[in-house]
Length: 263
Image (cartoon, rainbow, N blue to C red; front, side, top):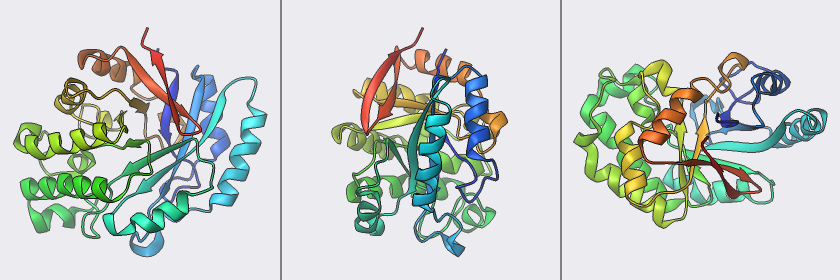
């Protein structure tokens, strides 16, 4: 059983209304040992939708960490929306905050989020996916203060052709994976893909290539924005990890990885 969920959101994220306490209580009820909240912070997102009150968020996490200390470990994380030109501002944001864990994610490509139909309508499916992967590679060259890169094929969730073939993007995907490995960073296996694509993020081909290329650090996250989704699909995540050749997954405390054997 996977007992740590390292990608979750509560009402501190612009796209969730769920109280943090309810997320944690649900995780404890489901038998998790660790829950890491990773609230969204997307600097320069249109309309300021994903700003984050870090002081208020941290204060609540510290209080809840104490409240739940006898039943589940609560950790303090963040999911950063990364674009290359934001790198210096993001470094300043991260500095001194005391995060246990930082996910870097690509949500915008040239200011456009693949979540909205206009993204693929304007670029087409293949070009839209290619531009998305290229943006990740560019971001990796600009920003390094993170622990894992999130949902590497996020854009595929909203593509008109959800059953995309990663082999069509093999060169850029392998470039991304090699950069992540060389930086000593990790990736995540994200079960939100099960709800939109029918498989975990990233595609099993990417998981296997990451392992084959020497990747070791991989966290597991549900990307839950409501209590019922915490640890959603973790049985399938475990199967996907095993199929890709992993015998463990990673957790982070104070930005340092620890490895947990898959039973």
